[in-house]
Length: 194
Image (cartoon, rainbow, N blue to C red; front, side, top):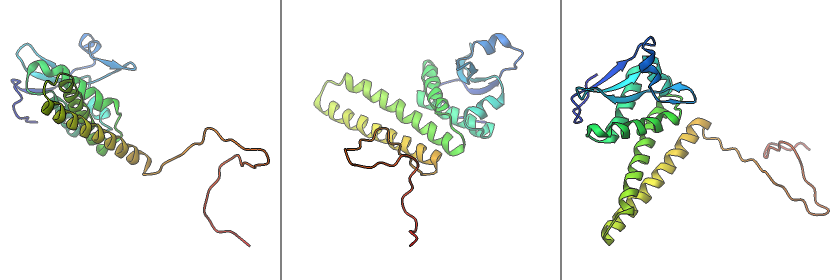
């Protein structure tokens, strides 16, 4: 897979054999599972380190290895073009993976959510250090728009996962003296028989 130049000498996918336990043990993990990560080799080559090709596929909802690798590469692009930004690429990759996409649509949305969150955090940092009123106004609008976009993306993910259905659970009910309450599943609508 060919990738455009990012300031790295090249980007490669490196599949680590399970036999190489010393390298596999150094990969980051969440809940005991080994996760994909970007790393720099001594020659400046950026590699996507995996225990197996299936690892990246599973991390992005069981999609093809090529599709999932492309999503991981998108996360690296979020980091910028400096070789020191591999950690930022890993943070964005971590966000996308922790959303636990279940299919290709969720993988795309997870990558977009990682991009939105990363940009929002960068603009928030700039906002905290803004010196002039125009800077403050511009950055405040940018952070606000990104926060609203992230919220809309979360809602889109929820709708996609739930098929658009929304469930409401009532946790507390008060019944006054002489009142009546029904406990159980109540469905509104339907035809009444006479």
